[in-house]
Image (cartoon, rainbow, N blue to C red; front, side, top):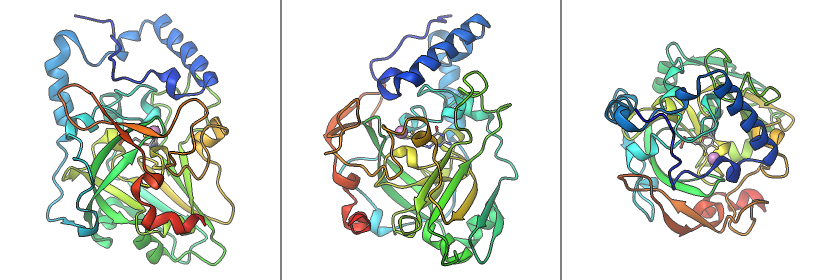
Length: 327
Ligand SMILES: Nc1nc2c(c(=O)[nH]1)N[C@H]1C(S)=C(S)[C@@H](COP(=O)(O)O)O[C@H]1N2
Ligand SMILES: [Mo]
């Protein structure tokens, strides 16, 4: 059995994508793991484990089908093909389960039964929804969206869900509400990413928007992808999708939605303020301090993870919907 994890060329090394402080901490974290003799748990793929891994991956993606969902004709296709399901399902960011890209197996620990989403704060109708209520209250549709990570890789993903605007209409924010905060599931006993060992990370993962951004036609809650309920690695059972912004704005596994008067603090912005701003709109002319954002590595076809270099568009190609929000 091959226990050495060989870095694949397509894996963007973590020091390229996170700040040097964070990288330093991560190295300390890895040392702790190796010291504790549990380094082997970092190696889900490779050697003779491969076929069972491939089966486990298939299992993780094979969530119940979501029946009779209408494609929204305004978002039925984009200028490039939809990324293969298996590629999208094994190349993820979900730091609660680790700081690498292949956290799909570890994310299977996420407990999604009896999930509740609390909608609270400056609203006339605060309400705690369970998943069935959400799916019954808000008609589901399919939308094919471009997806652009701040690390400069991209995909095209077929989400199933409902517009955030529908939730706004149901809970009726008061005139004081100016912002919204999304909070992800967090339990240090279950989420084994750089949590206990690193300390000081601003868990839980939180993200936010201005209320007008949330009310935009594009802002979407996803409960499914590729015709199925969301796999855990994609942020089951409900996550945010904001296609004109960098991927980190889309909090996964949302448990709380709060309407606020003040701009909320957010995870990456708190951790590295000069690299990840609150707005985080996709902008090819504004480089990240450590790399260009002018192009992207578009991941679409297997086998193996390879990419095509593509031009990055302002607002990720969604300017006609959102540019007016930023004038
Ligand atoms: N709770 C939580 N949400 C998160 C993240 C995370 O680490 N934790 N990563 C973000 C980042 S950086 C990206 S690119 C996307 C990745 O979504 P995907 O793995 O479904 O493609 O999720 C975003 N949402
Ligand atoms: Mo990202």
